[in-house]
Image (cartoon, one colour):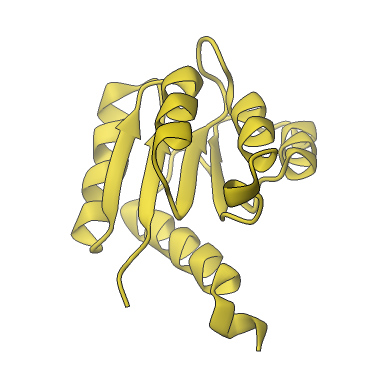
Amino acid sequence: MSSPSILVVDDSPSLRRMIGACLRAGGFDVTEAADGDQAHALAVAGSFGMLVTDQVMPGMDGLTLIRSLRATPRYARMPILMLTTEQDGSIREQARAAGASGFLPKPFDPDGLMQAVAALLDAASPTSEG
């Protein structure tokens, strides 16, 4: 079974590279986008099995990106992990309402990222539905 392709979106180049390197080391095929607009264009043109997105970005933010992708049939059930520095619980509520599957507060360590990704992918796998 092949690992899903993951779209990683963060406006911080260093954080985006770190996330990408961590996921690639875990065997995932990773595509990186610098903001929500670029991520949306890549998602429309391609096919991804998971989204890891920042919330606060210039242009299209994480919530808008999630809502937009959830409105696309092929991404309606894709696992979406939102990364955020926001401590405000209302952001999580808004993200969950928009369609986020899980959250990871920044800063995070590579193990925490891999655990969150694995948990969301496992929960979304067809075999876990019985």
